[in-house]
Image (cartoon, rainbow, N blue to C red):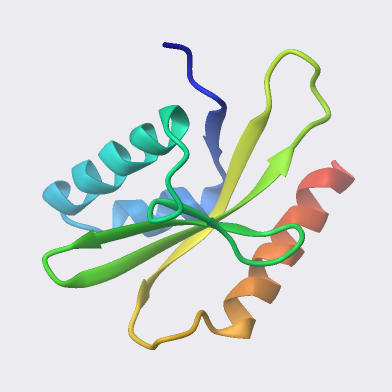
Length: 110
């Protein structure tokens, strides 16, 4: 079975992951890998026209990694992870979505 997409982390997402403990990172990587092979909205959900989120629940804590699609390459579609957060409220804060939109704009400028 071939993955549906590849995942690339931007610096901010790498920094977010580096601050988590090893078991939490492993769980997030496991779910990210699962999302590459299966269409599961519990793992990977569209938030806006351009922004998606990887969703991970681990030890009663919600982790979110924001992403967007890069469809400029004809061979692979990449999902670029812009940043992450520990979710404490019901809805995703609009500031986090805006942050992902800014990361997306900067990514496509280069």
